[in-house]
Length: 632
Image (tube, rainbow, N blue to C red; front, side, top):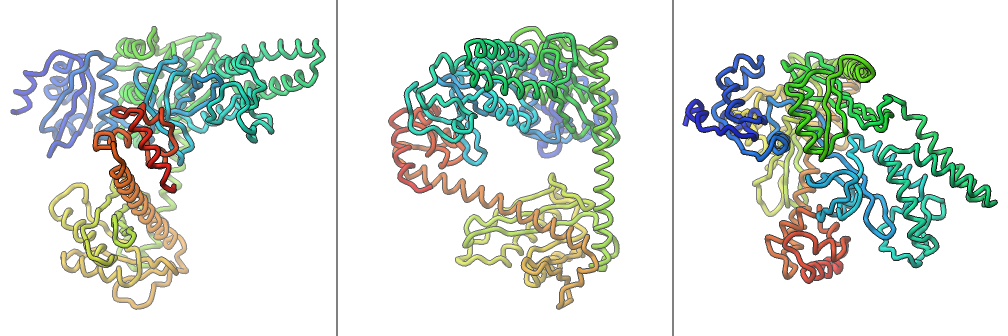
């Protein structure tokens, strides 16, 4: 069915759509209140969308759509599809990570936890019940959600961790995972002795006293620190009147620390509402968005976000794309959102954010007054930071160009190589053998062009030469077949190894009748070998060139080893779970969704394991018994 015929059957309902190109490749993902109107605008008014839109439509061969029940659901669906497919014509965040939240648990003696990927039906500080999660020992973060109050999101994870440390230091709330009931539970930890925990594990702190501290932590995380100051001043006065001078001194020190924190928070607005102030700055290559977080009238944080694929877009379109990424990941919005440019549909955004938050959200493009001054402040910050990024990028390019020039002279190349590829093979006794191909374009890592290979070589003894021959042959064949993922061909190939690996590469290139420069970097002495020369080239006069080769080689090794470890860990996890009675394919799949590894499962409680879908308490008990017997 051709596109024009297919357009006639598109419903007049909200949803998300995917515009596809050759072989079903997703070129663009969008959302619409009316799929019929929006898709007809794309394909019948293609000249109105700017140069990027005309190029995209010229490559389009098909489209698909998914219906949604509301505009908010279409917004979330669009964000998920963009994250899944990474379409080349969508504006995207350069750093597309999930946001962390801080949660106060719902226990007799609550503690602070870090959680990620907050489920859609939970809101910060809402106390909603969420039952999925896991503990990741590598990240030292607990991913387990039960009833409790959640605060965030925190786009800046460093600021979030600093906030957690401050909350513990100022108020003495515990961070341990002990199941406390108010009685003494063993010896208190170091945090108790250095005055960073009041020690509910000692049995000397009542639940009522601890609840007061938790309430102060909640006010602190909610940005209402002025109320805490008033409370501490009153408590200090009462302690002094009752001649409790040690307690008064402790409260005085807390007040001093808290006021020091508050000094860094600038009064930004006389309005006590929570606000997000969003401004965008653009140049020819990229865009930068600054998000200023105002809570209770105080500027508490500023975060910058670099965006990709912004050429030919208006500032309003870029802001619209940023808000799609940001608020669907955050799952929450403040009472007021200020933007530096008019959005394509301001009221639609207000309606969607209101539904997301649960009550009224206002989206404004202020033209005068205090709110306009806030926007101008954010705009100036965005322009200055974008200028700094551009200058730093220019300096990096100059350094890379100098290194490439030295490399061409050292290797006696006709001209500096534009595209350099480096290959590395990783395996242990031939098992889970994997190879990496990393690409540096103009001397800078081009991570979108990185590729991985699962080796098909299955000899009894591992043969690194055979594996390297296989990966190079497969790479060149894919390019010869016109596979865009392996085009263009490199100007220089860097081999991990010495003369043996170099000879393998030369033979593969000769068999393919391709004229590509190749060099090998020996691991031990960092010697550089080129074809038809028995001795290594003199690299001493060219330190910048040698450093560039080392960077490329190290990146290839890192990329290969990371993939190999992941494959090995996945195989180990699967084999361990296969041997446990009562854990079938469905339960194994759900367990691996909830926990990152078998180690994390072994450290979970029976209740946490039983909370995983398809699991029950007997199966959880059996699983834990088997895992406990293993040495981790």
